[in-house]
Image (tube, rainbow, N blue to C red; front, side, top):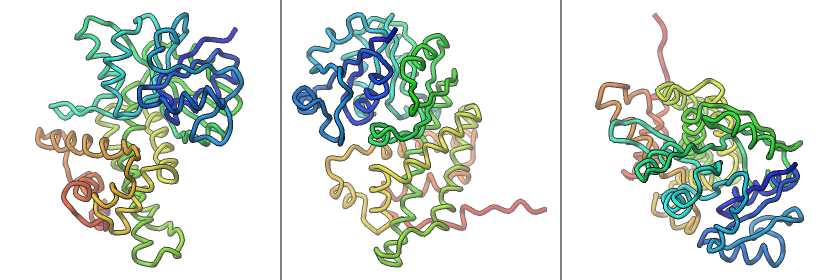
Length: 350
């Protein structure tokens, strides 16, 4: 017996999830945010997202945001498909109004840095903010290497669902898994969510090496893998330092590394990193990609601020994070994208 699944947020990733959800025999209702009116209008007219090259599976139902309460009637669970810039909007306009009995699965990626240098996931942030309103809720989440239009194309995709309520995440897995969408499960919410958010700022750094090759050898030089691999290695090393502080499980670390790989090779973060590597200033790169949502920049700044605070408190050594510091300096201090390669080396000899 299929489930009733409502997806709120009809951007690319939220909408992409409608494919495995519907193809697994569920009733799927796709709800746009107030920014998605044109998308929902087109879906109603053509059964297709404006950014996808194929139609939705037959039977997906479409709702404008004003109709969201109708769309969650008798629902088994809700998927949050907003971007990280919509976290507070989703909190105030959906989570604060939605029955706490309805499970929520979030695909929104990001972290919040606290005054003590701790990093918390969006599910934890929502949980704390809702508690202030007297609402008790646990929120599940999706993490892992997944590009939306490749999921739509049925490329083999492996992700993880996390949540503290094991029966809930297993129910969600059974509802969503297909022969191309493969799902692991974990109770390590903070570990998984931190891992897949960290990949954003480090993918930005690795992508800079592609732009640096273009700058030094010309746009026809092609991809050079030595520099990419060196940057990737340093990114993984720093991610693991942070994830160890977060007490993340090794499986979640590995998922984060997989997510780092896919983000380096596709999407908006790659484009921005290449522009910086080519010598564009932060402002120039932002102008070139005007209108593009760049969640990686928010993550990079928040993580750097958190690590600086932990260093001030004597809980870590900032010298362990030369790539993180470099990205922060490129974004906010006008530094050239050229890497401090010698800072990435180590000496473990006796």
